Image (tube, rainbow, N blue to C red):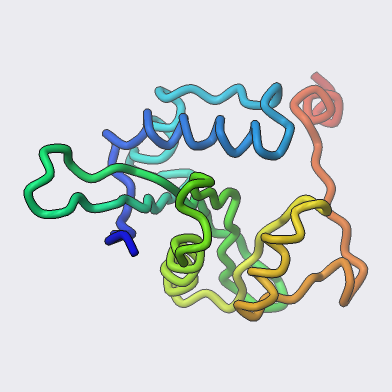
Length: 167
């Protein structure tokens, strides 16, 4: 078993995070939707009022190995608010490189995110074909809101937002 450290991302991690975002998009068969840049990640996550928070999972080298730690996963999250429950965390992305899956790294990221800021709920979305992820979330205690309550998730893209705003 490899030695893993979960830590808060730093500005210098943005290149690795972007690479992992692209890998996740490839895995989800949605790579054409990635428009973010390393500069945007840096500006949006590390300013005075960050739009997001991020944890990275890194493999620590065996003593005596010349290379340093290697980032193999991340969890990117932000805070939302429920009018029924108060503070919530929304996990936008969680990703672990395929060769490091099955070692508890994803679970460690999720558990560390769940401890943040005394929130009453932890929300995330998963594609309907990703049964492995769904099984993990359920095993960790998550409830499938589509099954349990019939909720569906919607999104307005930039053009629709402009139309809504009348611009």
